[in-house]
Image (cartoon, rainbow, N blue to C red; front, side, top):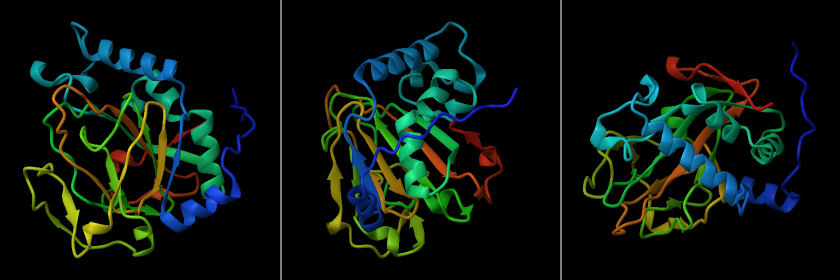
Length: 247
C-alpha cells in the first residue's frame, strides 16, 4: 500500500528562516504539547522499568534511568511518532527545501551530577553527502537551564566549515568518550534555556555543547533526532545508513 503524504505545515516565517541561515539555529517555543511530553516520558520510563526490557533498550539495573537510549525510533512506535511530529517535518522541509529523513535519535536522561558534552559539530560524527543535516532537540523537562545542563551554542559558527576535533580537556565537566572542537573561542557561547515542548533546530556545523548537571534533584531529559534531506546519504556510519521518512 502506497503511503500518502499529508499536506506540509509551514511553521516558520521568512524572518525565522533568515535567522537560521545567519545564526545556525532556531528555537521554537511550545512546538510540542505538555500532554504529549508527559505521555512520552511515562512511556520511556515504563519501557525501561519492565521486568523484561527489550534488548535494544536494556542496560545494567543501576543505569536504566541514566544511560541514554540510542536510536529508539528504530524499535519503538512512540519514539517514531515523536521523530515525525508535523511541526518538525514542516520546519525541516522549509529549512532544507525538500522533505527530510531521520537517521539517528537519542533519548537523554542527564541525571543530577552527570557530565555534559564538550563543544563539537555534529557533522564530525555523522558525515553526509550532500551536507544537509539538521538536529531537532526537544526539551522534556519543565525547565532546561544552566544549572541542570542546557545546551550552549556559538551563533554563526556553522559558517566556519568543519573544524579539527581533539581529546576532551575538562573531564570534570564533559564526557570523555567524545571529541571537542579545537582553536575556537568559547567565550562567545550563549546558553539556550528551554521549557518542556520547546524545540531547538540547529545546523550540523554549529558549535554547541552542554555542561555538567549541577542541580541537586533535577534531571534534564531530552529527545534529539538528526535529519538529512531526502536526497542525502550518511557516508561513513554503517549503523546510520537507514533513513526513516517523516510521512
